[in-house]
Image (cartoon, rainbow over all chains, first blue to last red; front, side, top):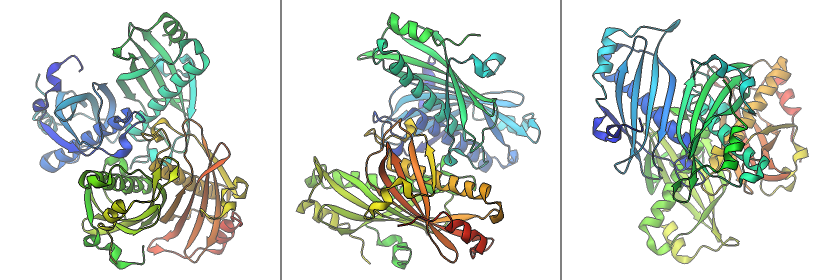
Length: 143
Length: 143
Length: 143
Length: 143
């Protein structure tokens, strides 16, 4: 991620949200703490899935589990400025998809995160139905 | 990480610690929350660096910044059982090193995390001195 | 607090702010967790002090320490609805003041919190200067 | 609480536990953060209730809700030293009881917290049965 300059451009991301930072997100160096930043990415992923269910009723209520997360810490984050997060779908596989997130503060990209989300059925990973695949692909993150 | 079976063996890791889980680490599904798990890995990295400074006085007080974190979520974690974390150095480069962590609960590996830690000087990344390199390599994680 | 019905009226509070809730604020019962709620009150107190310093330059940069916090949990809070917090000064003493906070969600008061904030000098509690006293009193919470 | 010197004596508390502190508990001043401390008290209350259910099977699985929490911050807490918490029952009422907690670090009392726990039935507060009352009173905090 770190080596893809376009990943640091907010405009590339199909879904955007703003999240307030909190005093408790700061570490002893007065920067946003690494694990607090992991929490911001989590919040972004959760809100994206809520958005999909609300705006694409045809997909029903798919359940996703996080199988893998990669985070590149690029620059320091600060309180109390809010952060903006951009999300886009990188690829859709048989039973999982890859979600890319960019973290921005004051128009500066301070981090990137990719997550692998597994579509979860009653007995484990389940094939992603065509309608869900089409919806996910409509939020594609284009290089 | 996920595809290396030996990474799931606690005995492979040179540095071990136990961390209590907390009620607040649980998510609405009564499992250890993904970002709470990221926090456990952070705690392990911090304790490992504290251990190095205390037991290897010759390295002085090197300062490391987390540049990248990868987390594989393998299985559900539970409260109130404590977790055990194993840490080992995967490789040492010019100005950074790669630290591997295994997360265990009840002798079961529930997750893996690799981190890239950059040796930080006053003006940014700084070469890792030989004495620090030798110390890090003494905690090697062997395949 | 719990027994003062007027404390549950948002309009009584001189300073208001909105705070987003986060997925990680939820406990295993899908309600806002008790200590996550304590964190929301903390955020409100910090933001109030930031507001005072920004909008009342004449007070300088007073430093306050939290000496005591009381929290009444009145009703369940939910995610992802944001919360509104109202703050007002209950009383100003010699070296400390009492700050009342109301926590609202969907126009419902779900909690109350009072805090005792000590004005901190270099050697411990310090008298509150007249100009600071006047500023604090201008945010009074009236019964 | 603050004005009762005996509340600062660890030996007064009938139930004791040790909790590890975490790097993420620190605030920008390198002290244990106020809301992180609220979380430690929460952990102590949860562990006490787990202890009651495990060691006093005759009480069944009573469910308690936190109705009120009071916290006195007495001194700064530090990382990475663990904290010790002592808990004792202050009084038992009709449908609730009052639980006192002392927070210690390096044999120093750094905080006190009282909580009001409501016995919860299916339709709200429920009378505390005699057997539960006797159990709670066996953990009394004596002045």
